[in-house]
Amino acid sequence: MTSCSRIGVICDDRQRPFVSEFFELFKVPWEFHVAERGYDVVIVSTRTDRIPAARLVVVFGSEEQPWDVFRLRRRDAVGGGLVLEQKRRRFPVYRTTATLEQASGRTIKVAGRDEAAGAEYNVGDQIVLRIGYDLFEEVGWLLSHGQPVERARTPTLDIHVDMLREWILEAGLPLVEVPPRPDGCDFAVCLTHDVDFIKIRDQMIDRSVLGFIVRALFPARLRDSASNIVWSRLFRNWKAVLSLPGVYFGFLRDIWFDIDRYQELERALGSTYFFIPVKGHPGDRRATGEREPQLRSAPYDAADYKPLIADLSAEGVEVAVHGVDAWQSSARGERERNIIGSLAGERPAGIRMHWLYFSERSPQLLEEAGFTYDSTLGYNDNVGFRSGTTQVFRLPGTSQLLELPLTVMDSALFYPSRMGLSESDALAACTDLVATMTAHGGAFTINWHTRSLGPERNWDSFYMDLLALLKTRSVWFATAKDAVQWFRTRRLIQFDTLTAGPHEVRVNVAGLDSIGPGFFVRFHQPSAAGRRGEGACETPGYVDIPLTGCRTELETVV
Image 1 (cartoon, one colour):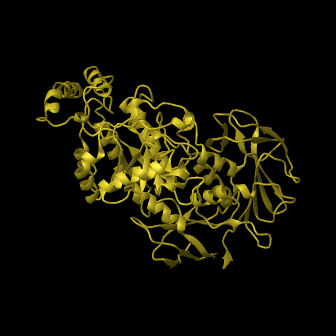
Image 2: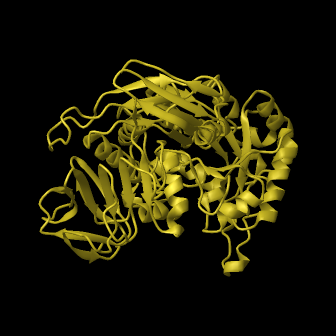
Image 3: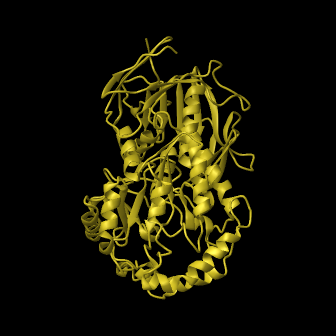
């Protein structure tokens, strides 16, 4: 038996939380560097007196090391990020970066420029990769601040994971990993619904209703995802407007109530509803001296819908909080959680802030309020990966609060003041996102508002097309709470013993007790040819081994 790749990390103390979180996303055996131990891979992101001993040394950062062979030219961070290229990948970096002067073995380039942001060289039998940005500063920035809207479609953090994995394998070193994919699936899917409105009868003829009437009578678009004109939508809109008197008098079906339709569409798929806990309250931002727009207040009283909420909960649907003030007050967050909990019969685990309000203090406040996950971090005006990852992650400054990133929201796709896409373009955008999810794993979180199936939005056929697209993949449909719990359990997995030989792999893993699909270990076989050129295959072979039980010893022929 020979030791499988041992990874040691040398970093500043302040970076340790981001290093730990990075290796929860890249679930491989690693540890903070201990001088007396030997390592196959050493990652450096702080000043050291000499090159550490290891087969592969990856050195990150814009500050010069005493033993650098290249001169570094620092480039300050720019708002939209500096775009770099590595093979066929393009990705932004957001913190200070250095370019390497007179670097020959270029690993990373500045996009559109003849400048190296990363290069490779050898010291004896060591492979040294000198990278001009600090990986863990980038991780900290992405998880704390997120990406600007123009970078929404780039899974930047996941690209950092892919590159490090690739560099280890290209150095001829084996690697064992627990991928962010439920066993037998490409990724998880969470169908979620913000309940901003329940029935049009909850409000009189106000701005929302008048806007509905105007858009119903004069729709901006009538084409479906196949670009065909659907005249039935226009007739459906007009019929809805004409039915308003009967709706208000109570003898016709309410044209905004479609939760029962969602239940039919999503039967056995799992779904999560985020209910606003208080009526008529737009939120309080007196601490910042700003006044909330009255449109942010809910027109319905959740207490009036206790039977509906209780029935949803009894059917296995997750009921969560669409928070108003929780993002800025733990006391108010706890109150909002208690209100919805009293209606659902159990205290909600999760929250998504109304209008996606969030601040630097929000994670800590939500954790203090008792929530175990949040699903706010997404875009109001785009779709994609605000935090640069497809995965559930721990929010900075918290001990247990996990973030289920919001990937796609209906209003972001279709509102003219946001992306304003046609349905065919929106389907193409979602298809690209699904391809990214298939490549990286993680959780694909959709927010389709409960009003969006009916007139005047008429986004029901598109939603069915999106569900059909997802069903062509190997995915696990889960409530938000169950998906988060799966990722939480993955975080508990520890590599106790790791050995690898030419014919077998043995891995002892502790901490397995998951809901839904299980986990598996992926044993990556290094490239037989060692380092590869630009045109070579980027993916070496691997063997996947399912994990069972609380402590499992696995053997397989490689």
